[in-house]
Amino acid sequence: MGLITKTIGLTGWASLAVAGTFVAFTRKSRIENIPPTDYIFNSTLFRRYNPNNSPVTQDICVRRVPLASIKPELLAAEGKLAEAFCAGVWSGIGFRYQRRFLEKKWRGPKTADQLWDREALAASSYDVGTALVDHFEVVSKTPTSIIVRCGDSPTITEVRESDGLFEMTAEIKEAEGVAEFGLKSVFYNGLKGFEGTDQPMPWHVQWLHQLYDKVLMESAVRTLKP
Image 1 (tube, rainbow, N blue to C red):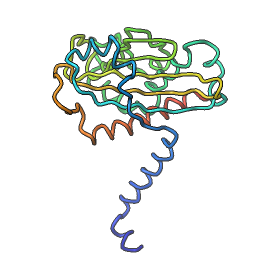
Image 2: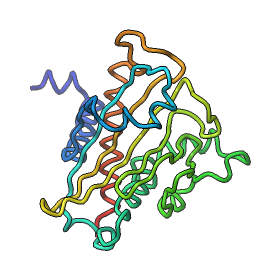
Image 3: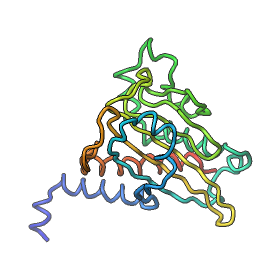
């Protein structure tokens, strides 16, 4: 035990503590593969922005929450839960660092009409056309789903090298007494055609993305509690 302690040292123990906190914080979220039959792969959006049918890096983060643990007003009107969940993703603590990074890099007169501040991100209803932090744009909205295009600036409207669709879903399952939330990611190189099994993200980058998804999920869910 003494050898292990000396080997790990203070930094090692700090890292273990952080890892333990992360596991505890995200333990109720799970990562799954998106089935090939999922509607997003057959959507007009996917065909429009990935016209060459380039390979994708994909996954979905899923979290179920008891209805009793959600603000009643979000369950009373159709579509309110999806809007609030989406607002929680972007205004929550999980997105804070990336928001500040993008703000320092891209906020200016040309992007003044986009959402940047936490208060604006928390209050938005995320209608189609809403752009945020010069990296996301709402391209689809239903009562249970909001999809943003991601990967590059919304000012670049044509097919892009770095591109993707990120869907936030919120479905109320009355019979089970829960709401099921999802963060669905589909990333691709829109300019590059199909080449074997090449993926736009190496495995370790996708792994980090999945960890980030879990943080976004948990911080968003916390904004929905009474």
